[in-house]
Image (cartoon, rainbow, N blue to C red; front, top):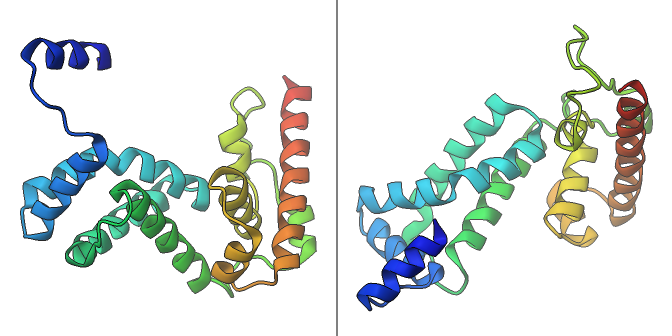
Length: 199
């Protein structure tokens, strides 16, 4: 598809806007109230944003809710967008912050387990036993981690955040962030090993 677009562009000698400039043009239009421009931004970026939200929360329905919330916040914040970075970078960070705010708001609930015992005893499969060894891949293994450990793992290993940033966002000490990452990696290795051993 990309090669076809390049061929068509070369054949017609029309200038092609780089993705960042294309996004910025859409942001300007959407910031001025153009709903169609915003819909284009949504179609272009929603899959990637959904993927990171799903990794952070580990639940499809919650990721979909957070995706909608992130885009509502983006719509509201577009007039203040400064064009200093790529829109995708700005949107990605906004979506991650939306998910982290939800995690922080559930701090006292079971979803944000602080004690080390919760990390050790968190189940590897669902209670009905419907998750099979063959269906347990890396993404699903990550989704089974306790929410706090999963958030640290995703933010550090996938998103490239530093422990200082993670600690500040999740309201924990830097040492706790490092410990959570170490535990999450250990649990992930164990779960992937168990699934492989059953296959």
